[in-house]
Structure formats: C-alpha cells, structure tokens
Amino acid sequence: MQYVLLLCLLLPHVFGVTFQPLTEKPGLIDNGTSGPEIEVVHLFRGEAPIGITVSKSGRAFVTFNRGDLDSNPLTLAEITSDDTEVAFPNAAFNQPPGGLVNTTSGRAVGTSDSMHFINVQGAVMDSKDRLWVLDTGRPVVNGDNLLASPGGPKLMGFNIENNVTTPFMTITFPENILPPTGYLNDVRFDLTPSLTKSGQGVAYIADTELCASGAFGIIVVDLGTGESWRHLDRLHMVSPTSRLLATFFGVPTFLQTPMMPALHYENAGGGGGCDGFAISADGKFIYFTPIASRDFWRIETAALRGNTNNDPLAFIRAANSVQYLGEMGGQADGLETDSTGKIYISSPEHNSINTFDPETGLISVFVRSPMLAWPDTLNVADDGFIYATVNQLWLSPGFQNGVDKRTKPFALIRARIDGGRVQL
Ligand SMILES: *[C@@H]1O[C@H](CO)[C@@H](O)[C@H](O)[C@H]1NC(C)=O
Ligand SMILES: *[C@@H]1O[C@H](CO)[C@@H](O)[C@H](O)[C@H]1NC(C)=O
Ligand SMILES: *[C@@H]1O[C@H](CO)[C@@H](O)[C@H](O)[C@H]1NC(C)=O
Image (cartoon, rainbow, N blue to C red):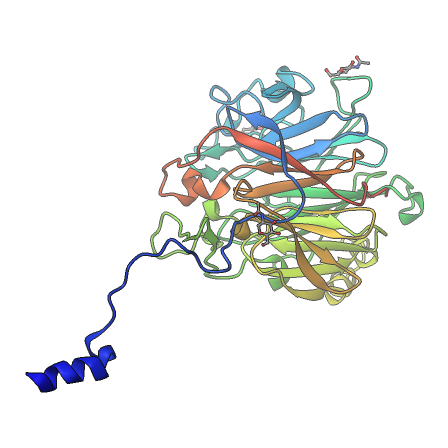
C-alpha cells in the first residue's frame, strides 16, 4: 500500500490530469474581420442580385437571374431607395410578350426575342457613362439554364441621362461565335478610337458557358461594326478545374449529386468557366478566372483584338499571350480594376475581397467580414467606393439539392478605396 502511494506522488502523469474548462482564451482568435469599414447601402427583400454598376451621377443598376416572368418580372432594375428596385428602362422591356421560353420545337429553349430582356447577367457603365446590358438569353427553369436561341443573347447599350427607353445599340451573336450553350457573363470596354478602324472601341466579354459540353471562352466585339469573334475557345485557362471542392462558411460544399464537388463543370448549377473578368487600368490586359478554379490569368488585349474570323493565326497569338499569375488562395466570382492598377478579386471562400498588385504579383486581403456571404459582382464607382452585391449564391437551390437555403434580405455593400474608376 505504501509503495502505491509513493508511486502516485513520484509519477503523477501516469494517473493523468483532470481538465477543467478555463475562462482565459488563447492569445489569437480569428474575428473574421479586417480592412476598412463595410457599409450596407441597400437591402434586397425579393430576388437575389447578381450584377451591379453605378453611374457617374450615382444611379445604380442591378441585375437578377430569372426564368419565370410571373414570379420575377424584373431582370434589370434601377435602385431607387434603401430597399426598392424599379424596372429599367421600364416594365415592358423586362417582359418579352411571347414569354421567356420557346417550346415550338418540342424542346424548351430561351426565346430569340432581341427586343426585350430575357435573363440579364451583366450591367456595366462605360467611360462615357452609357449603360451596357448583357443578356444571356437563357432563362433558369427548374434550377438549370435553358439553351439560348440565336437573337436572344445580346449586348445592348442605353443612354441613361435622357432616360430613352430604346437602346442606341443592340449586338446579337452568330451561333459560331456564341453557341446556344454559351453564357454571356461579364463585359469590359475600351473606347479608345485608335483600337479599331471603325473608331468606336471594343467590348471584351466572358463566356462562362453553363453546360457539360464546355465551350468556355472570350468574345470580342467591335462596337463600330457590331462584328464579334471568339478567343481561347475551350482552352484549359478558361475552363473549370475538375472536381474543385470549395468551402463556404467553413462547409465543404458539394452539389446535389453527393460526390460531385460544388463547382465542378459537369453540373450546370455549380458554375462554369471564365467568369471573373476585368481590364487593366492601361487597357493592355484582360484579367480572368473561371468560377470553378483558384487560378488567376491575364491575356494581352492587343492579341484579343486579332479577328479570328479572317486571321487564322489570331487564335494562336491570343492563346500564346496568356500569362498564368498563380493561385488566388480561393475561387473567385467578380473581378474589378481601379485607376491605381489594382485588381479587386471577390473571394467567396474567405468572405473577403482581395487585391492583386500587378507591380508585385502578390495577392492581399482588402476587406474581410462575416457579412460578405458570397461577394459576387464588384464595381468601382466615381464616389471613391467599391460596391459589391452579396447574394449567398452557394446556398441557392442549384448547390443545395434543390432546396433554397438563402436567408433574405440580400445586400449591396460598399467600402472606401484609394483609386477611382478606370477611364478607358
Ligand atoms: C480583428 O482582427 C484583425 C486582425 O486579424 C484586427 O486588425 C482587427 O482590429 C480585429 N477587429 C476587431 C473588431 O477586433
Ligand atoms: C420559336 O421556335 C421556333 C422553332 O424552333 C422558331 O421558328 C421561332 O422563331 C421561335 N420564336 C421565338 C420568339 O423564339
Ligand atoms: C431619369 O430617371 C431618373 C431616375 O428615375 C431621374 O432621377 C431623372 O430625373 C430622369 N431624367 C430625365 C431627364 O428625365
């Protein structure tokens, strides 16, 4: 007995320690927050927002994805107060008289209506303060985007200051440039006259594609002639990373098919190819990243302006001008540039907006907050703020076995930045 007692005293660790929960905490705990203050400037009590653009005079335009005219009569709206949005240019323009879907051939496809909005994804102000609207022509029905009919997908320009209700320009795309599986996602402009013979500048468009067949790419438009051509078609840099598994709010997220990672391209609801899209402040590069990817790329715009319709080597020159900039530390949705040359990168996996500095090649956190529940589109405005839609995309039915797990309202936020809008 004495020997046992002696052992206890000599070798306390053999018998273990009795833990108690302590009130004191370790020295470093992630508070989920860094960077400048985030202001919530608008709440969306209805549909989740996608695109956002703010004009020089402070008018804000927002896009909503939709597939059903009755439940969602708006796909492009102007924000008019803290929580109201009004159809732009009017309600009728947002409602194709023949409906969004065409079933004449026995298979439901998007309407070919070129005069009304079908399913608008992008809305971007150019340096002349004109509003450009990018319509995918692909309504969402039962969680999937229907295929487009040529004529339906379009780029439309509006003069906003006099509120005319007809576009000054409508550009549709031949089927060999934009296949029915294509998805016009985002657009950037350079209006420098010397870029083209017609002198009206160019538009660069990300084709995200939302389909297993995978025709991801970049489309370029001559804004003087309306001619368009296609680059990087199906090359790996514009294509999704196979089996990418992204983590949102700490949850590795799969699609409705349990073993299919959320952003895998074989699942339409989970995203697709070339999506994040921005032009460098000097107009020399387009920065891009597929939504289902953590890789960051840029391509020379001079090579993109090579017209693949009449120059057989233009495609090769453009492909050879792509530069791999490394990983971003997470997948990204929207990209944006400011006048200092910085590229802003939305980072839904980290509830943050990061920046890429082209001088150093480094990515840093700009702002981080638990409120940034999937920052989607980013827009630098003339008032010294960067704006972002926050839409909980990974909780929408396409990612969640058909169940809508989003919590309304959705938000428009902004944060102060050093730079201003890029003037190209
Ligand atoms: C949160 O942590 C960051 C460092 O990661 C720090 O800069 C910031 O001041 C903290 N915020 C609060 C509210 O404690
Ligand atoms: C509907 O589809 C039919 C048959 O494919 C086609 O002829 C017609 O132009 C389409 N109409 C619209 C408005 O899309
Ligand atoms: C255009 O519409 C905006 C927003 O509804 C309004 O503030 C502005 O006064 C209108 N401009 C003209 C010239 O009608």
